[in-house]
Length: 349
Ligand code: ATP
Ligand code: MG
Image (cartoon, rainbow, N blue to C red; front, side, top):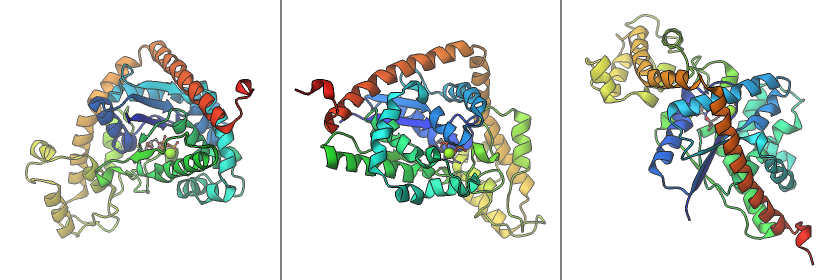
C-alpha cells in the first residue's frame, strides 16, 4: 500500500520551534523522501474554533500566518496539498456519523483533552464541540484514508482515538476505513518541547514560545530569560539538567558542528552537561550558545517568510486550490462511507 500522509495545525498563532522539532521536520523529511501517494497538510480552523469561538478574528488572521510558516520552512505546495479545514464541509459529515461510535466517558478520559480542559479553565462548562474535537480529527484523517500522521507526542492519544473509531466502524459496517499510525520524532527531546517558562509544553495558547518568525533581538531576549535550574544561583553551584529548558532545547537542536562553530572548548553536549552538573558553568554561557544555534536555524526561515508575506493573495489562492482538491477526495470517500453504512439511498433498488 502506498502511504497517504496527513497532518494539521490549529491557526491559533504563528508556528513555533515546538512545531518545528515536533512535527514540521518529520513532515519535510517525508515530503522530500517521496514515499507516498498523497500528502496533505490541513489548517484546522474549525477545530481552533472549538476553544476560540468567541475570537473568530484570531483564527481567521492566523490562517495566513500558519500558511506562511509552512512555506517558509520548506513545505512545497507542488508536492503537498495544503488546505483549510472549514472549506471541506464533508469533514463535518464524517464526524457526525462517528459521534455515534464514541461514548462521552471515553472522550472525557482522553489525557490530552483532559490537560487542555484544565489549562483553559473550562471547569464544568466544557463546550461539547471542544470535547468532541478528537472525533473531528478522526474525520480529518479518515476522509483522506491517511495512514501516516507526523505529529508531536501530545497527539498520540488522539490518533489512538481515531484507530478506535476506525475499528468500531469497520466492525459494524464492514472493512472500509484505514487505521492510521502516528509518526513521532526519533529524537526523544523533540517529542514535546517545553515552554520558555519550563512548563511541560511550548504552546501557542500558553504564550511561552519562540516563534519561527521572531526577530533576532526577540529570540535573544527570550533565550536570555529562559527557565533553567532555580537552585543554580552562583556559577560554582552544581546545576541540574533535568527540567532545565535550555538543555531540553539543546537536546532537540544542537549538533557537534554547533560546538565546533560556537563553543569549541567543548566537543559535544555531553561534555557541556557534565560541566554544568559539576558546577562552574554559568547559565549565561549556555544561553548564549543556544541563542547562536537558534539564530542560525531561524534566519533563513524568517527571511523566506518575509518575502512570501509580500503576496498574501498568492498564498490564499494556493490554499483555495488545495481546499478544492481536498474537497473532491473527501467527497468521494464520503460516498464510500455512506455506501458502507447503507445510507446511499439513491443507489437503493
Ligand atoms: P494550541 O495551543 O492552539 O493547541 P499548539 O502550540 O499546541 O497550539 P497545535 O496546532 O495544537 O499547536 O499542534 C500542531 C502540531 O505540533 C501537533 O502535531 C503537535 O503535536 C505539535 N506540537 C505542538 N507543540 C509542540 C511542542 N511543544 N513540542 C513538540 N511538538 C509540538
Ligand atoms: Mg495543541
